[in-house]
Structures are given as structure tokens and as C-alpha cells.
Length: 454
Image (cartoon, rainbow, N blue to C red):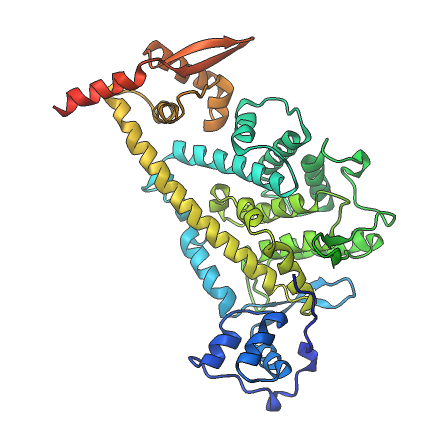
């Protein structure tokens, strides 16, 4: 991880008449220096390759950003403003994201056709995404449990037995809670309630739940590989005033005039700022990711209910703190962090497309069960399809209910109907009824398929 501060600030640039020459579009020099939004430490080796003094190359880079530069009403710890540079580097991924999400509107869910046009499929996918996000967000914070165990825990609504399981449940409950706040502005009460939901019964110091950090709780975010400070948050005494400023920024409309900020970009900025301010002694990362989702959903980007980002953050985790470092070192230029998050979102949308493709395959496979009984509903068909792929799996009224967002009575009716048809069987585990695929079901289905194909 790089920690070198750039040698030149926007205020150090010469008068407009003597700006460094910006390389012509299409030249190798332009592509190498300006093709990507690079920080200082990546510009230096490029400058050597181009036989340019590094400071001159950096001056070219900084000058090229002036046209799209936007000063934000958010301040760094020292009082200097944060910046944003909305040039082509950000506009291209935003265009792709808007295209994939229908611009945040209902068209993203393709209500007139396709798999997301089916309400049952949307509900099932939304619940599974919520469970995946709860699990992965907990993994980032060190929770040691498997995905399958975490999903089963949430499906069965079992009481968590370990701190790791409690973290998963807390994340799940918090993600459900933020969807009830979509008509509310961001406030101190909301932020503290969110941190409380996320950290309850998971912290060594229980008094750190549900309150801001104090001045006697110095926080230093450290790179464990080098033991160097990555970030020292603003003084705790300044938190109330600084958070008020953040809330005003979050709740101010930026959809008009010269101060326009794209809603997804603003959600990314809020994510950054919660991490930067570090308002709590613990739970800041979880809170920041939840606030990102809250803001995106609040501004009509319903597709984020089906898009999990924490797994991608975790798998490429070194990029996460580096994006913070790059933004802080370069005059508070939040573009580095925003571009990082936009890349994560694009990857998540690609994964969603692949997931929908897989779900489409499962639905088509489940149509085979209509050969056995034409009035099986989609939930039942998908359950049988899953059971065929996982012959040792068991299901309960709670797990089927929570996987599909249905009532307990509807869940019980689905399962008992499959037992009545002899597609599933039951056994008791203490007071709970477990539903399993009936012995010989696979052979029965295959025999029926073979007869209908003749």
C-alpha cells in the first residue's frame, strides 16, 4: 500500500495561460497519463517511461482534472474541502450502471418479461441477496462461519450460538430495517440505531454499542502488514458538528443545477464519509455499507435489493483501504474511492446477470415436475429442483417461509401438499417437522419423463 503524498496540489498549478500541455487524445502519452484516473505513485513510473520529469507529468494529470472538478460541502479533518472530479472516468461506468439498472427506475426489474418479471422470483432473489450480503458483510469484519451455515441460520430463524452467527443475524436485521427508512432523512438517531442493530452482542466492550466514540477512545486504522497508520479519524469532540454537516449533505437535493451529483456517486461518498469520520468505536464498516444501500434504495435504485457488493469488497480487500488512502493523500479527492465503488457495482451487476441466468436454468428444469403434477406452483417446483441437487438437504416451514417471503400457513400448505403427493416425506427433530425428498422420487420423475418422450 502506497503512502506518498503527491508533490503538487490544485492550488499549486500555474496560471491558466501557462498550464502544462495536455497530450492530444489518441496519443500514447495521453493514454498512459490520462487513460485512467491514476494516483501519484502510479504516475511516477509512467513519467519515467515517457521520459518526463515526474512532477511535470503530475502537473499534466492535475491540470486535466480541473474542468470536471467539483468542491463538496464536506470538510477534511483539517478543514480543507473534499473534491470530486466527474470526468469521463466516472461518467462511463455511471452510464453502464444506469443502463443495466434502468436508470434506477422500475424498468430495472423488467416487469413485463424475463425472470425478474415474476413476483415470486423477485421475492426469492431479493431474500437470497439480503442473506448473502449479511453473510459477506460479517465476513469482512472477521465472522468465521460458512456461507451454507449462515444461510441455513437465517432461513430457519435459529437463535445464534456464536458471535459470528450473531453478526450475520444483526446484518440481516439491519438490512431489513433500512428498507423501512426510505422516506426518512439521514439523522443522528438513524445512524446510532443502525450501529446498535449491527453490533449488538458482538463487541468485547458492550458499552460501545449505540453511542458515538469518545475522545478517550483514540482510533487509528493500521495496515497490519507494515504497522503504519492508514487513517486517523477526526477528533471525537468534533463528531456532532461534523456529522450534522454530513447529514445536511445527505439530505440536500443534488439533482439540479451546477452542484448535480449522481445518486449512486452520492451513495459512494456517504460510504466513504462514514468510514472517514469513524463515528463509532466499532462497527463503522458495517454501518457505512448499510448507509450506501439505504441511500441507493431511497433514490429509486431498486436493483440494489438484488445486488450484493460485500463479497466483491472482501475478495479484493486490499483495494478498499487503498481507495481511502488515495483519496486522502490527494487533497481529499473522493474520485478515487468513487471509481473503486463503481467498479465493484459493475462487477456485482455482472454477477447478478449470471445469477439470473442460472435461476432461469433452474426454473426451466423445474418445469419437468409439471409432468408429475400440472398444478405445482413455482415455489414447490424450485424446492424440488433444489432437493434433487441436494439429496441430503432438509426443509422446514420456517426455512421455506423465509426463503420465499411467504406466511407460515402458505409455507406449511406448500410442504404438506408435496407430502400428500408423495414427492416429499417427513421426520421429527424434537418438536420440529423436517421435510425431505421422498425416497425414489428421482426414479419416479425419470420414469415419467421417459414415458412422455416416447
